[in-house]
Amino acid sequence: MSHIYIYSPSSAVRDKAAFRRGVARLKHLGHEVEIDEAALASHMRFAGDDATRLAAIGRAVASGAQVALISRGGYGLTRILPELPFKAIAKAIDAGTHFVGMSDFTALQSAVLAKTGTVTWAGPALGEDFGAEGVPDDIMEACFDDLVCGQGEGTGWRLPKSDLAGLASSSRTGAEGDPALRVRNAVLWGGNLTILCSLVGTPWLPRVKGGVLFLEDVNEHPYRIERQLTQLLHAGILGEQKAVLLGSFNRYKPSPHDKGFKLQTVVDWLRSRLRTPVLTGLPYGHVPTKVVLPVGRKVELLVQDREALIFWG
Image 1: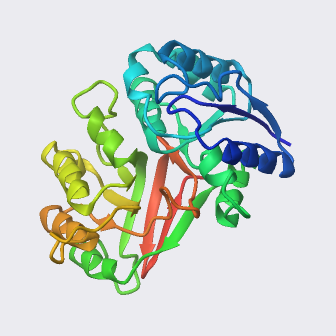
Image 2: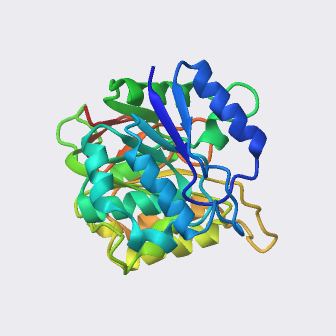
């Protein structure tokens, strides 16, 4: 049984039913769940004013829990990054607390990596994942369980066929049968594309060279995704990576003006401007099936045929 601390560092929890379902699900899985006193606070669109949310982060840091899990993402962390207790967060991580979240949580994860070099975890949120109606995704729960039990050593997924041509053009293979791509000793980092773009030019964006960058987003039309990728491209960030992994980009509405412009158009365009391999299909983002990824840890990325694997154990 693990001690899980639930807190709300970003937007206010609007779906109280999902919150309750998430707590019940974690308890059903055998975890001890502690809920922060301000987890359901509300101030404008936020889970409490800035001071309230900073205090909640402080309590999560001091909880001694094995996992500090956010209730939801939304918006709110970028405005309080300068006040985060970075030394205390790093000390808690060294003592065994895993900080887990996604979406807006990318801001805290990036800032912690930039300022302390310690590892946080990109993974589920309470309401969206454990509080989903029906039975939560079994792969998500299995990956989370591996993290809690200390058994997680890596993850993998099957690449779509459309990736094969792009891999061939950037192949590092030698003899026949060698991997299409092998990256060693590279820092894994990334998260929500919009949040990362908002940190460009600030002290809170880690400047990782030779890393593996993973990206996802939600409710963003493909042209907006392309615009943000263009920003990272022109800032030199994408070209400094050994690989770029694209997760889920979903919940957007096509426009009559698109005239054939779609997400694959964006991927093809990016590959035409970048020598760095771009892989798609990573099971991560605002989707039920999501893996758990160590932000800031050195990994090995291996692609053999259409099988992609990330190892950190």
